[in-house]
Image 1 (spheres, rainbow over the protein chains, first blue to last red):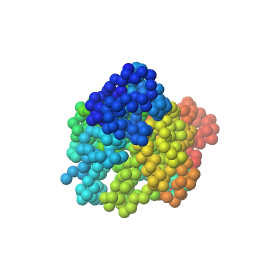
Image 2 (image 1 turned 90 degrees about the horizontal axis):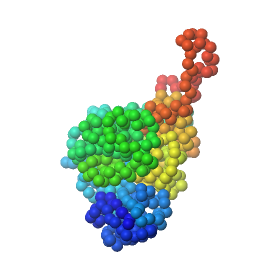
Image 3 (image 1 turned 120 degrees about the vertical axis):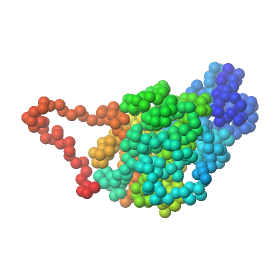
Image 4 (image 1 turned 180 degrees about the vertical axis):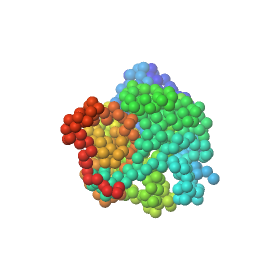
Length: 91
Length: 423
């Protein structure tokens, strides 16, 4: 059971702030594919550009930015928590 | 008529009303304030500015506030020092320093915070907050106190003791987070996202907040008799400050307050945490840094929100970026203090050390008119500086004891560079 938390900036496509996925041990890429299936092309358009995570999107697995892990190939375990947040804060 | 049309996405151009929002719902890009430049050009003139308050609010016509109610502790309108002795030491004919260490809470963050908290009042929020490496925390604490609003401040637990003491005095809720600034910032972003009636100055009202830093450019030009410098050097953490200074100079040309703005923009980051400077030097992508340790805590942001734009601003302007070591940063703090009488924290040391490196590498020419932004006060980082200084000798209060100290040991007034007469 993987919990995915969404930024409010995604509320117009997810209509909720979190969702639960039954995906077992997998990768971030597979989690995103499941989310695109669930929320449609509008979700994909906001998160991905030509198959890569958009510049201003931060994806975290248990608080760790996937750019510091293995990107979309970062492993996701059952019970992990994923957050999708804008990258436009701080400083 | 309102000067502000609304907010606009810097990436895709999508427009939004002027509300509490920092992210484009279409592409997650950053939002910026979208001004009506015709209205501003009609309202603005030099005499009105010169007769205005001696703070950032003399430039109110170029800031995104609708109401006259401002939380003003007096940020800005600081002295542009003609730094002749430091210039001579570095081989620069026309060096100027805008000294931000004298702001109400002793850093440039009072500018952005005064704008942001004033905007938060317009939004009628219940609380304010920020993620901070220390300087912003003090600024938000002070301005929130003045506004009578509760504040929630998220900091990495490892920042300088002097900064923690300063922020605590104002009475905000300080949350020290394990990990780096980026960890504190992510947590603060999630908290801000869960409280739509709280305004986190550098998160959900960031488009308004960053506008405050434009006043550094306005003040520079005004004190140069409405001319722009040839080259500026700014410290970089998120990159927002550097972008705002560049934007400020361009806006002055747009509204006709300066004839031409053709300023080379250069930046400096500590070598140990330099995602933007490294990207500029390699002309590559800004790659976030996860683990870093530097004396320049206030610049220690591994994942800079405006890194992409800062790199572009620098390279488009013909500037460059420096990466001084911690040792060079400390040396630069001493050099600035001993030539110009300005005591800065390691962020300012990073800027001066970066300036030195850019001169040595030929990216800054000796005859350029250069302005350097010294953004914070050395008193905030005494624990860091103490390691590079020797405590004075202690003697009994007797003339003989004084004279027994050898002259060379007491030669603390020795000039490191030639004195400038009539400076």
